[in-house]
Image 1 (cartoon, helix red, strand yellow):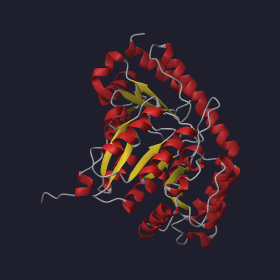
Image 2: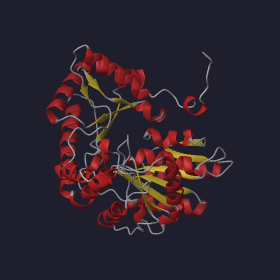
Image 3: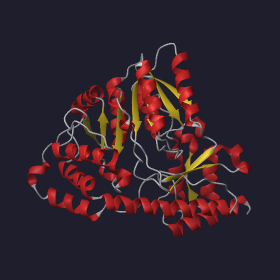
Image 4: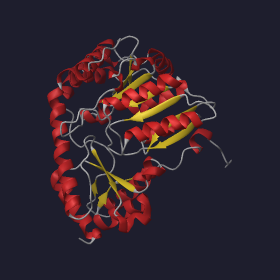
Length: 393
């Protein structure tokens, strides 16, 4: 067979999480009980009222036709109302909102729509893979800036990277609350970022996927709350986590008209939009499920407390995150030399616990692993007992 080359696929590294999934699947096929705290895949069902609305709508044959790539008008109105209610942000439904098949698809296609091989993009590191590899797939150059505990220092590093660049970066991609690090930001951080974007004429892309999963009084701000942010910024959100709707693939992008127009244009060539009954059900979620979101948030808080307190008890020091459905944990010093992939393999083989290797989120994550809070408290206690065996406590 010819030695085919597929340039776009070949420039992507092996998906590190697939190695863990293969080991986990093999262990399960051998009859082992593996506690899966790896992929951020919510384990609870979608709220009944949302499912009922889907069933009701799908029975109408008129909804079986092609939908609208930008999102049906009533969904865009619900998104506008959601932003107004949650963040005090006013949006033009026609020009400042586009729906996506989850935020992952939207971020990737925005990169394809706006970037070329002449462009460079600043991305925080570690970060969710599509933030980086959407840029790579689009053919642009990637500049990763390591996250710091002090976000003022992180912003200073961003500005330094801009000033030291031969060609000015075209875009900055951010994600707070952060996946995987769980790091949170306040509105003053976003004001500084917007100021930098305007000062150097650089687009800002913000992923707000975990804004609803917040604890201990913390409220995650939207970058669009900053005055003038829509001049240079867009923001993505997804219903996957807040509403237990990961498989439904509903997300949206809001903000700057020019970026929204570019994303709409490329999507109009690539898809006909999410199935209309799913969009109608998403309207129900956004309009009527705030109380369900609160329940989901409380569930993750309980699981967070169980995991963090359990790990601290057995000698693995962990700080409780203020947001997200994850816990970001530095590898215990006795195993740090292994790196995150080999340590994750060790956890499966010796503790029967699957986690995500930090290296899958960038080289800056290799001293960490990410726990996803996708098992109940009883299973989390079982996981902690398994981990205790390798810590020697």
